[in-house]
Each structure stands twice: as structure tokens, then as C-alpha cells.
Image 1 (cartoon, rainbow, N blue to C red):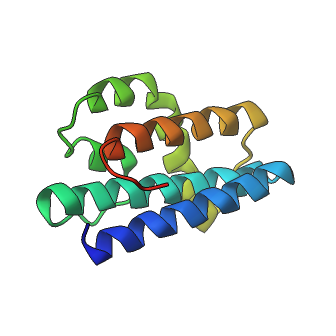
Image 2 (cartoon, rainbow, N blue to C red; image 1 turned 60 degrees about the vertical axis):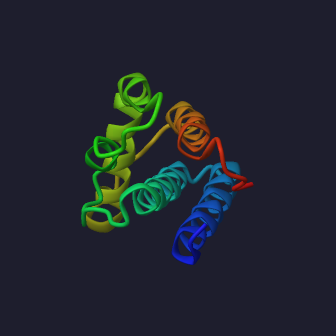
Length: 126
């Protein structure tokens, strides 16, 4: 695996750890932001792996639409509301405050774990 891809995946793991910490402390808005960052880096790593580049955007849905791997279309459909919430978490972290609820964050963690399985099922990215 290319060094840059490894760096993206390692950073995604760190963002997930931060999200878990925030979640345990009831900081759901920060947890959502960190989950979004973890997703974004995982997706961009996969695009680097498949294409050698990724579009300069923060839209998870746009980035995911450029990946052609088994299960990705079903994932996008299943988690369309979660993906929208994650994108809102990114935007609101920069420009204004938005509250998220525990259940929304729990669903976002599920999406993150499923995304990792879909994108990196053949590689050891523990």
C-alpha cells in the first residue's frame, strides 16, 4: 500500500478515536465532525488507491459517487440521511453550531464501520 494511502488511513483511525472520546463525553457535535473526517479520509484513501487522485471536495456523497466497488451504491442509499448529517457536521463545525443527538452519532458510527468494511475488506487496516 502506498505511503500516502497508509497516512490517510492512519489519520482516519485517529479521528475515529477522537469521535469515541467525544461521544463518551456527550460532545455529540464534535463526535459527528470527527466521524465525518474519518469517513472523508477513508474515502479519499480509496480514491487514491483506485484512481491515484481525488476531487477537491468535502462532500462525502460526491466522493462516494466516484467509487465503483461492490456494495457502495447500497451503502449510499442505506445511509443517505447519515451522510447528509455528516456533511452538515463538517460545515457547521466551521461556520456555526449545530446540535446532534446520541442516536444520530450511534448511526454515524455504524456507517463508518460499514464503510470501512466495504472499502477496505481486502486489506488489513486495523
